[in-house]
Image (cartoon, rainbow, N blue to C red; front, side, top):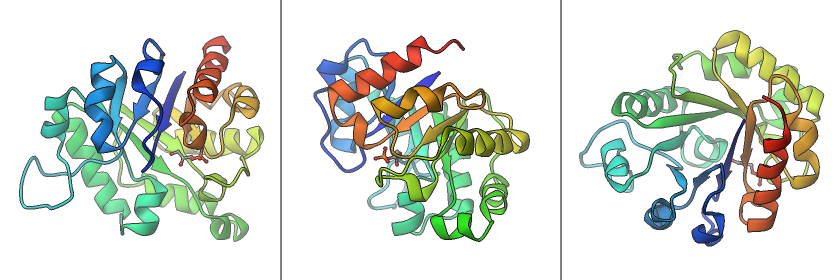
Length: 220
Ligand code: 13P
């Protein structure tokens, strides 16, 4: 069971208050070092496919590794929605990061419109088609309509989507989208749910710890 906290472009909690927690944190770039120094399993929120070069505003796997960062998210829906990330660029980022020795959480998920049009499986199939299995690759199913909205997928919806994803690519699958202490138990109890990618509830020490404690109680 893997619990990861994506702090997005928020400052986030004091890393020292999270010391010893069995979880991944994905802080903004400015707090990566602090998280590493607090002994946390620290991931970046994005990583470029080149090792170095004239790519203003990007960060590379070797630069992250040098800092003690051990992994990165790629393909978050906010990157796809606001920053032109495509299935191709997500796959390039994932491949380069894995080759360089970073662990990767690659995010997939459909929008509300796509779900209502019955396109969920087509969207997931397309998003996954460029990704290759790797021992350090984890997927995150984050339905866009559930992110930051309080509208969590039901445990059954998560289970169905995760089982479909696993039928296409053999990897652990985290659920993300309005995971809170009060719904984490039911979501994490689903057999195809291997953990959670937590946004808002990872910004508070108490709620993030509560989700981690719930996860620890679920037999693997
Ligand atoms: P929320 O938990 O705030 O809905 O965010 C989910 C998410 O996008 C994590 O990457």
